[in-house]
Image 1 (cartoon, rainbow, N blue to C red):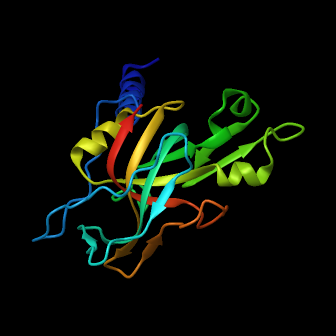
Image 2: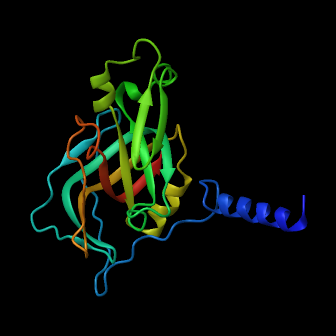
Length: 213
């Protein structure tokens, strides 16, 4: 192997490591728009063992004004769940807001025996699963007990903690389901139900707090 090729391979490996989940790099959070400060009040909390809690937006709660987009709160959101997978994004259109997707499971979608029979993956901002033979749970239960969620960290501390999250961790996430309105007129809207699937079924979460349990 030539010296030039070896250097190129080492450089590619270094770049891959830097952008991998094991890197110490913490993606930069979306900065506030000029003249605005970040405010991310906590919503009502879910109780341990319960399905995700969705709550009404308080009267008068303003949009979150960030440089890439304005975030309009749609609902409070609190979830305690098992991490079924994570996928980091660096170059797609949403990466400046949401650098990481977490696939999360609650209810029986936290059980080892169930997950052992599912082949779970992520990509292109979607979460997918498949099984051999009979499904480990009724398919409708899988749908309402798991989801792919786009994480928008509100602070550097939240971004750093999100960076440490790994598959099979149990996490608690508190924040707001939002619609992101870009300056170019683009819109990225969160799902507001756990019963849907396919395009538009992912939650877009402005994360005020995340804790590994």
